[in-house]
Length: 207
Image (cartoon, rainbow, N blue to C red; front, side, top):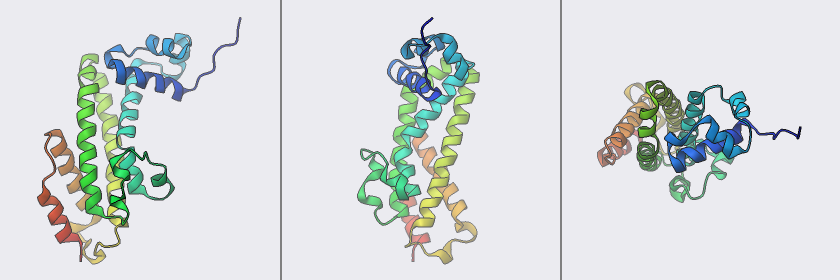
């Protein structure tokens, strides 16, 4: 017998993600991934015991990639330097850690990501069944929670914001919860975030 191909879980996920994004989730199967990787079906099962596990990780990778540029900018430091230069969030707009500018750009990114998710994944997930759809929603929620944390980091890093104002109803967590929920709601309704929100943030948070 020849040597068995050695392949990592990440390589398997990469092949699955490529199938899902180019052919649709309907084309995603353990066998299809095994063929794409040039390994036996059992090798894929060693990393992903069920197709649902694989689908969930594919959805998780989608959200990670869709929002990685903006989150790198929110986190700052070396992570920001390694962000994809093609991402709108890696522009010079955030050179001075402007929270409102970040919110404006993040809103556009979230809208584009949700639109891409609807076109590439949602129909396929619905066809796979309620269990896979629920799993995908959990992955979406986890990714959104990470973005929400990044939003608060961006607020706290803006040196122009008046710290004395960040109390009570304007505490960072409450402000970011409101901004994020409004942002996602607008994206789901396929509408741009109202400029009024940005004006109110400027008026409420800055000196």
